[in-house]
Image (tube, rainbow, N blue to C red; front, side, top):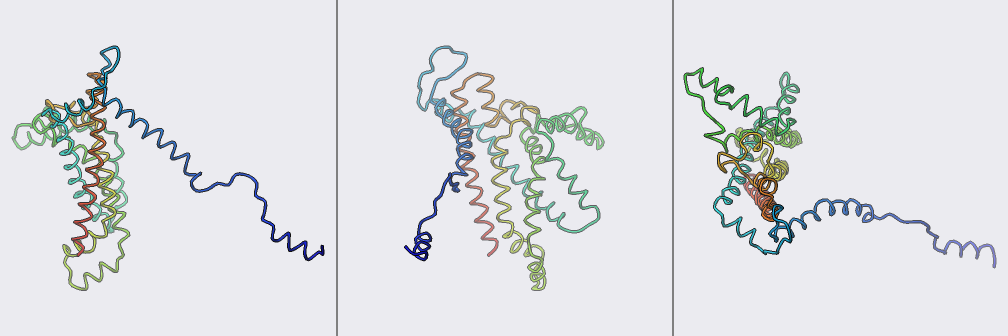
Length: 307
């Protein structure tokens, strides 16, 4: 064999590979397994418990009852009020935060002295813990004896209003909206700052008024930002618990009892794990349905507004 033939055979021989080759799937697998263990496994265990008559105060076996827990939750008028409260709280908070967040975003998008300070102050309410928010609103603002709103009413010669007693759900919506308005403002401000200035200038040169400028340019550009705000706020506000626990405890009656607080009552006050698990499954389903519906509604309305 000549030297040229040996070099040709060496070049044609496939290279020998040793060791383990990492693929994209193998790199994602640990994170996927972690998510399955921490989210899906507990959820399927919750579904299993929801079909049992599982009460911690009753020793012995926990018999299988099928959909009885779900039927009891969906047929009791008081429980239907709990679901309605969750929808009112989520819907009211979304409307308020989107409107106020959009207005503040458009304000902060304009240059003015002290804009960085104003932006920092407006963001601060989002950093306050839910229980602290509830205590501040309950004792410092809405208290009928020593609250700031009562002082304003007395200053104008009017009787103080017991906000948490007479307007409980509206008060809770105000608390939660105060927390989540900075989040909506930041997301919408980010979307607004990515809008090219030449589009606004071209619309103004064509004679567009401020409303036409907002409807046909700003609002369609906000589509993705609005979807992010709606999705994350819907999921988070449906999980509201601390504000209700520290301010109204679900009252008066069940006026402010939402699904998370209802689940807490069933699981840790009545120790009825079966009913609490069924309520948790309903909460997950409701969250997904409401989030998908709101996203489609936003996309359709914004697209129609752009045309």
